[in-house]
Image 1 (spheres, rainbow, N blue to C red):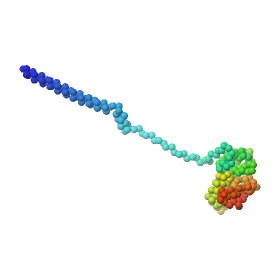
Image 2: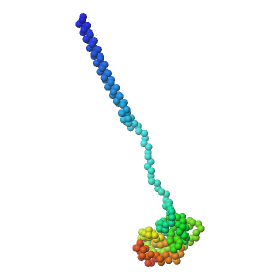
Image 3: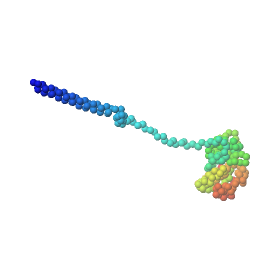
Image 4: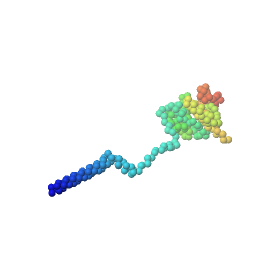
Length: 237
């Protein structure tokens, strides 16, 4: 009987030990599963998970409108000067005058000449320094009230050419040197066009002739490369 009891005790001990082992193994496995789940759900990994999730549902990208350069309206360039400057006024004056253009001309003092040029606008006037005044030639009607103007004007013609390119460079150099030069475009009845180079716009032929007589011929010929011994006074029409 005693041996049977001993055997039963041993069996019970083994069963209890085996059950304890199984429970330990299950507990260890459960801890591993819990730890794995915890690691997967840790904050360090959440942004990455969200990133992958959000990558598939990105909001629509708004179209960005690229500014396009605006085409400026065709208008006369602004003409502004703070004070009288004869050479700068020449720079802003008419470069090519078409024969038959309506005009007026006034002989006035410096301040009034300055106002008249500015009011007439860029490329709408010619200015010529006289002995003690200025002759201002303007296109159309006078923009200033109360000043006398004439419809008769003269220029000192230097050369004549059948090509604009044949005189444009020399006229540009004359203007840069302070000479009131411009191109006078004259079409003929038979369809030809002549381009003459004029110096100044004067109210009468005598004033124009006096200007021509006192012209620094050598300097003008050096600037242009022309022989201007045949220059003469011409009426502008």
